[in-house]
Amino acid sequence: MSKTSRPAKTRELHNHHFDSTIWNDFKFRDDDIVISTYAKSGTTWVQQILAQLLFDGEAGMDVAYMSPWLDLRVPPKEVKIPFVEAQTHRRFVKTHLPVDALVFSDKAKYIYIGRDGRDVLWSLYNHHLNANDFFYDALNNTPGLVGPSLAPPTDSIIDYYHEWLDQDGHPFWSFWDNVRTWWAIRDLPNVYFLHFSNLREDMPGEIRKIAEFIDTPINEANWDAILEHCSFDYMKTNATKSTPMGGAFWDGGAQTFVNKGINGRWRETLSEEESLKYEALALQELGAECSQWLATGEIAPS
Image (cartoon, rainbow, N blue to C red; front, top):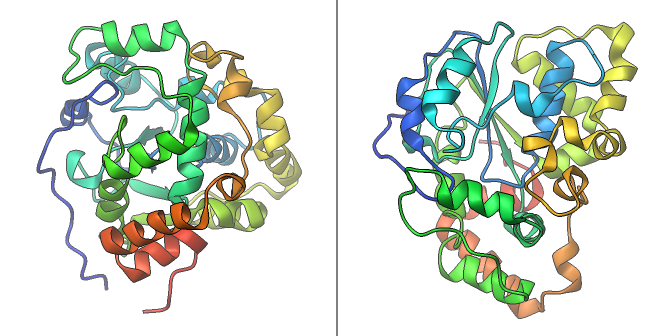
């Protein structure tokens, strides 16, 4: 029996992306699934996996439309909440909030995806660098913005890396806060921890574990189709179906959003000292066990 306490909402988070008050008006169903990451950690991939499991390997689904980012402030909650409440399929929504900024259900299923922060940063920089005017207009000019607007990034990924570490997730939100709060509830029976590296190394095995966690039997006759539709090549080719707004927010479209899907690109750019800076901060902010999991995907036996 887990001794982990049920999390409670203790704060609201607002910025150019977040409106955490949306969760206050969200009416849970017992079979809801919530996908959570910091960002750029495999969220879209797991949304695709869940769609394939829930819809039996169906091709061509508009997953981004079916599985909204609930705490994104665009569109506003007056539009988003009625849309989600009208859905008749088993709902699977995503969040990028820390646990204590959302409302937690004892019956919903939560899948948290982790990834080494350096890999997150490299993917985040591509995401930010290729954002277009439509992206900035939606985030900065939609009524209700709290805090500073989002500006284009620096031309140097090294500078971007140091700003992100030195300013606790700037210009987005705290990476450590997100990981730390979810790590604290990893032992709850309705929370499943998944690591991006493990999904890359053994996608079939991880998909089977996810299916078991969400209590959804796999139709073995469609297993090959499920795997094909969850492959990086398929998702890259059909990126408009899995990318928010069909990729309209990024130069190059949806295929820019579904970028590389690989780890370790930072090794070609960061010096040893720069890389160790991240590792030291991870240990300081998360502790040995959590920082080890984030780096390797391995959780030491308790």
